[in-house]
Length: 159
Image (cartoon, rainbow, N blue to C red; front, top):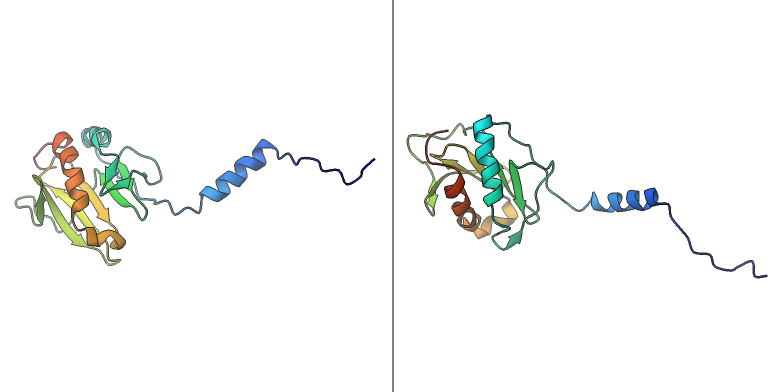
């Protein structure tokens, strides 16, 4: 009888699950605050979520946590979209201060961390897109990819 015979090691399913969760928590996934708009704006945002492209600036969709139809993300570091945000203090709804990309007006704000935040202007819901500093060299390319979905689902007007 061989006392040194190899026996397969069998881990209980719970141990396997904990190991998998432990590995995935450090993958650098983005997180963001979920807006809390009115029911009307929430419905517009849900329609936008369904119309969003699977890629933005050649980056695959990787939604931030917590999961919500009011938020979306692409790439890592993530380009983050939040729908139903409050009107930015710097925005004048009478004029779109900023840029226009494919028929959608955006207010541009450079953030202290080097990222750029764009917020739709003259739409029934405010949609915010944050482009991290590492992706800032791409300019407004993400807005080009998002403009069609915004135009299709968020009507013109004042939120």
